[in-house]
Length: 176
Length: 239
Image (spheres, rainbow over the protein chains, first blue to last red):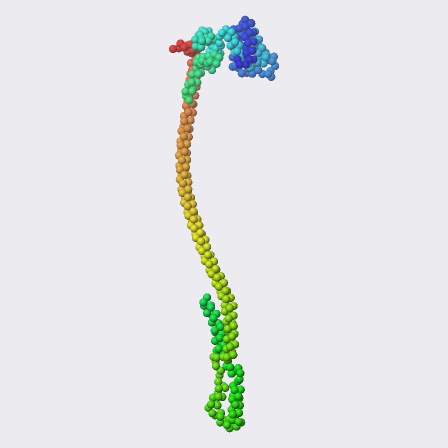
């Protein structure tokens, strides 16, 4: 949140989504778009390629989200890409989610797991984090096969790593 | 000096002796034998009044014959005539006085000067000899000092060489020991590195196998249990 430009775009996205009375859906869709940009370098470089005409880049957004995301989400992503800020879009979405959660007096807990969590697991994990940190959180799950098993939870700068990957890394370190 | 003075005095005495010795008879210088005989004969004729017979008779007289023989007698080989003695003595005295007044002081002065010169030369020679001895002594002292210095330098050089030899030997031993230690350390390091590499390789193989086993065993049920265990761990209810 250090970049005022990112904060400004996040505020804009939050207010537009809230005004459309479709906030939770838009948040989920924007979160998935941000994860897709983080995991797909080609997509990110294509949307940030200034050599491509803006209409072509917006067309890529339309082809990616058209019919699979709400019109508000598509419009918001197109707005950011059209402003030439596609490289900052993941950070803008993270700031927008934190801003939205803060409006509900909550924090965002990004949970990376090899498999998706059930609704019960999400609720129990949110309760467990609340018990441990004393903070109300909204759980955002990121499917990350590199975790292998278990869960890695990130709340702001705090990381709670219970992944099989970490266990294997610890085992590797013990061999040295 | 006394010897020279005696020689100087002997010279005029010898001249006087020669003069007396080789001086001719006084008669010889005034009349000959013939004129003496003629004179005696005229005197006899005159006494005989011209009588030849008386003359003949007188001639046989012994005293007349002695008188005639006196004409043929040789003059004294020793005593000169009186006038010669006077002239010779005067000349001798004049010469002697001149010699005593002028020659002798001059000769003595020359002799004294020469003696002084010889003395000074002898003194100079003595001084030169002393100087030479001093120089020789100084030279010998310097030579002795030089020999002592050379000996000292040689001793110092020998000591330094011995010390250097010892140092080099000690350094060589130290270097050899260091090389041995380094070689041993290198061998140990290589051995440790080989063991570490082997261990890392074995660990990599083992971890790869474990990862594959884990990955194959992580079905949905196991994943669910892992997530549940994580939630329990986060909430602190895992005991």
